[in-house]
Image (cartoon, rainbow, N blue to C red; front, side):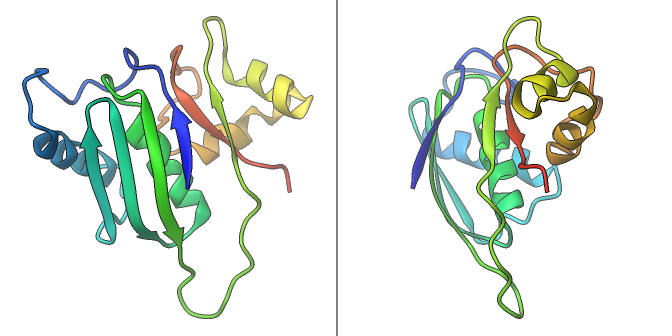
Length: 153
């Protein structure tokens, strides 16, 4: 289990009004995650005020982390509580190393973040690829957005 913090007033605007019930918000978040192509058939989303609670299972650690940041990078959400289990289909596959998360600050861009976390600005495509399909362009990030930072293999 883990708690991942997000900036409440940053992210996708999927709640058209604050008047939505928690169940409606959970359905909207599930749909938002699904639109990026993630299988959420075994994932339950619960909303408790500004917190999203994710339970169930996903196929890979990479998809787990992407689902977490997709659920958290929504305006009005300040924390994601992760209870997702990773299951590997078929033969047992060694788990991927744990990913890092990075919160974008004002003035950040992917090559600057790559320089900070990897020591090499030219490694920004690694960060970009790890955050697809949420990122469609390496130049379109915003302050408060949380990104997955994979280890260099």
